Image (cartoon, rainbow, N blue to C red):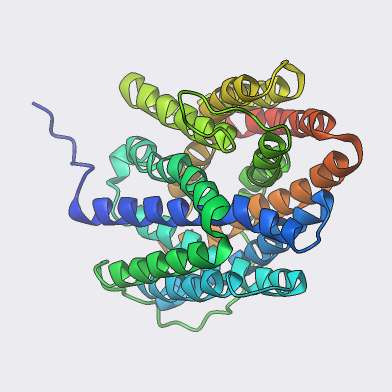
Length: 383
């Protein structure tokens, strides 16, 4: 008789749906705004700066929004952040000067950080301690599910209607997310006086370093894989457009690996599987750089990269939940988001510059080299 506590509770299902819709909407935005910037006169290299500025706001904002969620309550943070996100994405569709995109990207990133840190911290409160790795693996299907369909829908709508209708649709979706946040369990905010900024605990340095190094290679994928496909006119496969082939197949690889892991289990020390996942993601980026062809290359490399990348956040988050007290989890996840988004921003700017001057394949080769840097750090964390 299985006496383990259940994973799929109403609270867990609500957090799962919130996360799915968050990534479904956000990954309509991330590939399309750079295309809109190019319509407004930006160069290919410059179009990546939107994600650089956005993730800079998210990175430094996470150091504030994480502890702020601990103090004010994660439910309030989810609601306010979702409504703020709705305002930003609705505004993008009305802009005809690319300078305003960069100006809004910084505070927009801060709002994004609040949504992500609050959701992850709320998840820690609904997962049974004995099944955290299993729960995070199941929860981890939400974000790649959104990534599978978000770019496909976003690019199709952008090419047909432009950014304005797409932005209004995303604004309505994030307003719905804010309303859904009202159904989350009520907060029990901490009343003691705390600084809104808290230095991360020393034990967080190593997991943050792993995520930073991982993000350096990941940073340019959301912007430049779609641009490569569009520039080289990848043909449809079975009537399905392939502009988002890498991102969609990356998400499919993520889902497939999570299904495999839920069946074979994580063992008593889940983080020991982290180095193998990091290695698989590096292989996927290397394939993107060296394989011949177009759409097929994106499909194969996306599947390989997604299979490895899929478990990186899950395994690091499991380690954090085990190592950090529940009253400090918002700050802890803020630190991990800071590290990851800082890596995304630097990776997007650096790899984007390489792509703009040397072409796509040298950029992907640099991304693969950056991903390799995470492997020795993962080995150390797994000890």
